[in-house]
Image 1 (cartoon, rainbow, N blue to C red):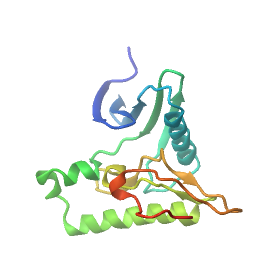
Image 2 (tube, rainbow, N blue to C red):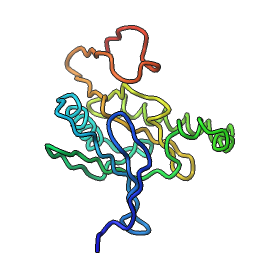
Image 3 (cartoon, rainbow, N blue to C red):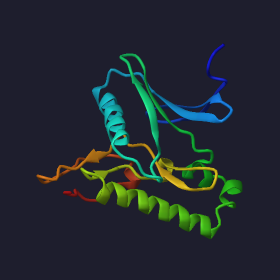
Image 4 (cartoon, helix red, strand yellow):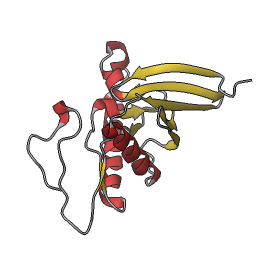
Length: 179
């Protein structure tokens, strides 16, 4: 018998397909299958995400349970967050009505706590470089978790840091920033 009871595609993105996999009734995970590509940039993004998420742990940052890197397929296995992305909720008139002001304030607070942890409590500090409503996932209690660390960068404490353009163009700082 196959150990996975049910697999369901829940989202297709620019970097891959995300599946909901029910291993047991009480053990559900999200599996991101990255698009197969010979492009080294995609593989570097995969490695950046693995490196970022294996070195941090915070209640408002999605948990990485495991990964598989192979020449033809790469997978990331995350905790499953029931409500999905903040983007999918805000784009639905029906679902957005469930986001009262208290829930919205708690979402903003959780995002700020996750970012503060990454910037001030991690060693070395980390910047995400692609925060958007698509990279904020919500659990069943509408608690926010930051995800999508493929463009993240660890800062070097003993030197100056600069970055190139990364992320979604609608969310990019409009000038070249040295960090």
